[in-house]
Length: 202
Image (cartoon, rainbow, N blue to C red; front, side, top):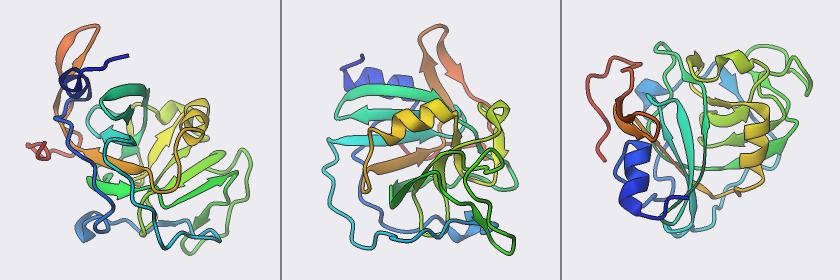
């Protein structure tokens, strides 16, 4: 485990900052409403979560999710992110809702019950009011690529492991950082998936 905050930040490709509570929905320009996930029991009042506790950081260009507790990197997993036409929004969020074996409810289309045809897999963690979330997938070959409609896809086993460690209210920070560090190779530059030409502020 890394215990030095700067070492963790280098690994994530960002300067770790306190992760605040959800302040706003994703920018309207980035919102994509093809998929909606309206499960019963949506959380309205969220508990306050101190920034030094467990939180999630996702670096879109790195296509990787990091689970951080205080200044300790707990785990990291490869993910799939949104396509350039349907990008994953950056910003600060919280887990708003969690479901095992969710039903997929795409807007204007029949619902898909739990099972092998369900693109959400067997775990769902909603992070925004407009339907973005972190979830398992029935398309494992998409992991590591920009393939989703904006959600964060994980391998089934990885989504199950994350699900067991987080709670409703867990902070989530999604960043767009092109420069990072990987132990095997040292400094790395990630592809500019959305042709932004710039990074989100650290």
